[in-house]
Length: 141
Image (cartoon, rainbow, N blue to C red; front, top):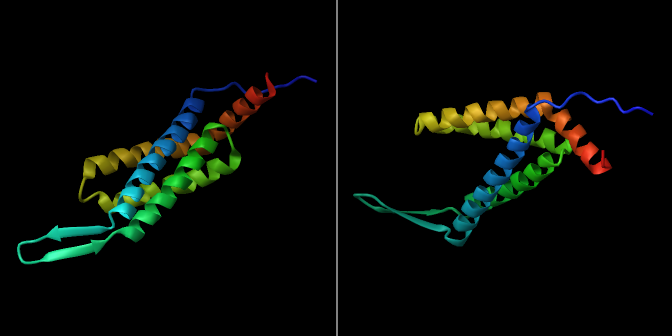
């Protein structure tokens, strides 16, 4: 039996890049979440009063989101189909949340949205190439 596969393009690198970015973002979110959980009492001093914020819930949300990002990034890097679907949803959520920060830091938000668009393109259009390449590697071809 002859195995016929499509040629692998350079976009497979973008799929792996997407996985690595998700791993990195997951680690950052885990660190941020842990810090917020450990130091949940945040004091802000204003000219007229002292404000107290409890950021524990925010920390737990970031911690859980970071774990999901980390695990999904690892799965995307090894070519799992389910991970591509989850990654697309997570990257779309990330791009939409950047719109809430665009007034605060427009250039950073625009840069993150641009990277998210590239990652989405790589995952949606060329994700199957990474899956096929990962399958060939596992089969020893």
